[in-house]
Amino acid sequence: MLHQIVSHIARRWQPARLATTPAERRAIARLRYQIYVEEQGDARPDADHHARVVWSSIDDEAGTLHYYAGSPERPAGSLRVRVWAAGRAPADVRERYGLARIPGADRVAGCDNTFLMFRRSLRGTAAVAAMLSTAARDVVDRFGCHLVFATCSPGQLPIYQARGFRTYAWAIADRSFGLQVPIVGATFDLDHLKRVGSHLWRAWARHLRREE
Ligand SMILES: CC(C)(COP(=O)(O)OP(=O)(O)OC[C@H]1O[C@@H](n2cnc3c(N)ncnc32)[C@H](O)[C@@H]1OP(=O)(O)O)[C@@H](O)C(=O)NCCC(=O)NCCS
Image (cartoon, rainbow, N blue to C red; front, side, top):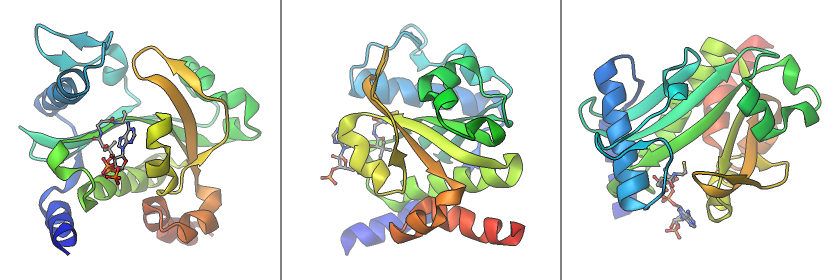
């Protein structure tokens, strides 16, 4: 009961939005450093230990979006999304997710979700799902994405499977995050997404029905 109340408050008071200013991006880079370097002790090649930020050139590319929850000065969580048009996935993404081996993947727009993170106090609350829903709705509405890719550690797989993502491939070795499992959520997998109560179903169902 207490968890439900906290969860409800978190969703209401930590609305998710797209970062549009350099200050918002800087705050996200700082939060990444706090979580990945200071909390988790990751030896990240993209960490700047002097400025205490984690950021790379990919973060500044035109197709890279940064969603965050909470205040612009001190975000509570964030998510990086790289979007691409049909057949235009960046080379590193193509290789990471083995796109050439997924029939039809090149015929639809897609996106790559990385750097999903929340401050400890908000993990396990509805604020996480709310931010993921905002991003999922946005990538379908604005960019027509039909495939949402991500990777996670084997230990985090249940979190993502409970959200409707499916495994489809081999695990990969990532220089920053160690062993990672590729996962995908697809707009044409609505029945499965509905069955598991996925945030993707809630984000996509209305939009996709309108399209039919
Ligand atoms: C990723 C994240 C936003 C997910 O938040 P969430 O959906 O609210 O899920 P939770 O953090 O509450 O985790 C759910 C369960 O998975 C477990 N879990 C989380 N990360 C795990 C890991 N790396 N290995 C094993 N178990 C893990 C949690 O302990 C929790 O277990 P419980 O339900 O028994 O308490 C949050 O875990 C986070 O911010 N983690 C730090 C950043 C990170 O590792 N991001 C992923 C890589 S980019």
